[in-house]
Amino acid sequence: MKIMKSLLPVLFIGLMVFFYGFTLMQNHDSENRRAVQLLYTEQPLTVREGLVLLEREKERESEQPLTVALWGKIPQQTIRFAEFAREMEVDVVVICGDSSLLFPSRYPLQMGEENKVLLSSDVAFRLFGSSRIVDGANFYRVHLGGREYTIRGVLAELENTVVIQGYRGMDRILNGAAVEVPKGQSPRSTIREFELRFWPAERVFDGMMISMWGRLFTWLLPVIVGITLLIGAIKHGKSL
Image 1: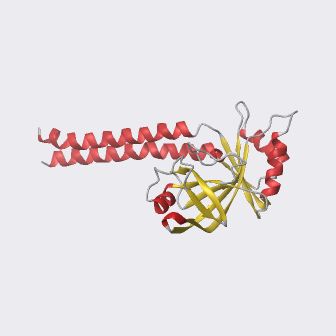
Image 2 (image 1 turned 30 degrees about the horizontal axis):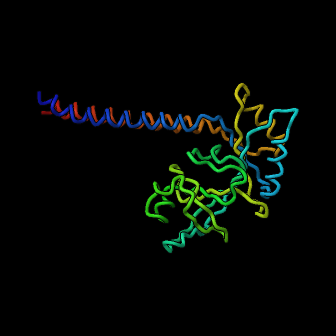
Image 3 (image 1 turned 135 degrees about the vertical axis):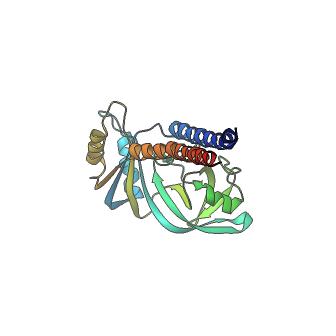
């Protein structure tokens, strides 16, 4: 009886942790349905060059166009919310294309939305005092790099990061690409088509493989915690 009394609370906690991890895994699956390859080059493009390539890709008639987002990062930029007189330094991800290829969000940025911005949840909290009130709210305005932006949404999985759409006149910062693998097509053939139309890929990462390892870790961690708690309770019960 004493063993059962000591086991029940720990077993209950273990089951709660397990199902919490399972729920996280299900939510992660629902947000990341797209098979994506990440490709990098050592010779960055200007935003103007990137936009020209993307527009050319959309106009392809004889071949199926690739779904591509080009991106790069500018570190240590100051973002400011004038109404609360708050500012902070952030890393700015400049993207040309659909931002959801890189960062799953309920409110992704699309090409041409040059006056909107995505914030990581910690940036939103420090500027506005909350991340919930700004997610999807298009009336909050911030200043970044001499331009004014409205808030498009909040990204939960990033830290100290702001995402904007690139605009013509920006420097050579586009050194990465996220490419969606069409259904029925292998990642290798998709990469080959990308290299013919954009640039030779010097580094390639499988976005689906990275996502799979993330889901596996999310699922295993609660299981390991639950089992550890259960074993500890059994040992404790035997010692009584």
